[in-house]
Image 1 (tube, one colour):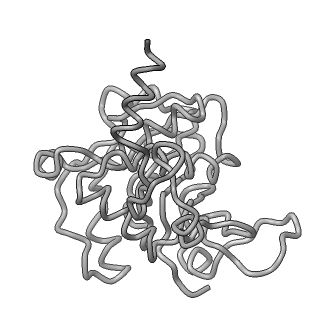
Image 2 (cartoon, one colour):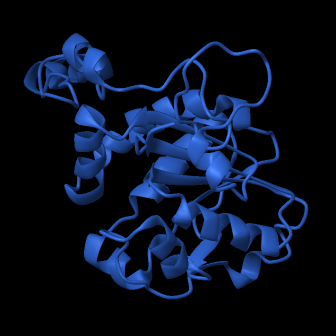
Image 3 (cartoon, helix red, strand yellow):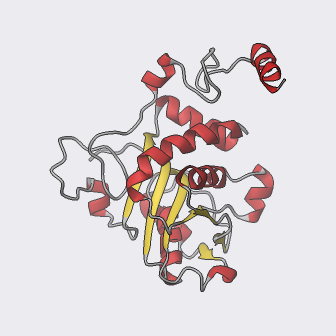
Length: 242
């Protein structure tokens, strides 16, 4: 009976491509055309932020010019996509268009990109929203992604590990230095987790990395509370010259 019901449901509501809405074989998939246009990151990448790099791997740690210029406080980082084209549209639809169904396939892409970062005892935590912004948006897209990633990688998920201590003005239109100043001490570890983090490894999840200011504030909060290692994983990385 369940199979009959599922077949009928599929006939009424066939799976649609999350990129263009065309018919696909399975839920939350991409058609061939959208898949080919999605800017997935592969090959040699910056070990700090996950940005793609030219050349072939020689087994040594490599970082992009941006991460060399602005050393990151976290140990390693990865990103699934470049923030451009269809990837940008997907991120904006998830973030501002209430397309929460995008979180599941996006998290699967992130889990594949982030596999080198995962450790069995790692805690997965999203970048938090301030409560006023959360009330306005009604959900935290980074928390949706983090929950799915933790499920995919069989890791511990802690949605409220990090909290916003204040609501800084928007980062939009600010220079890199202004972004870092704007977010200084704006993110802290929740009081009930202060002892739990000592000696732990943390994976911080966000939707997009631009300057890295938000991820820096979150990493430093974890380090101040005793985390032994912090890694970051984002859905997309803003493309910059390397």
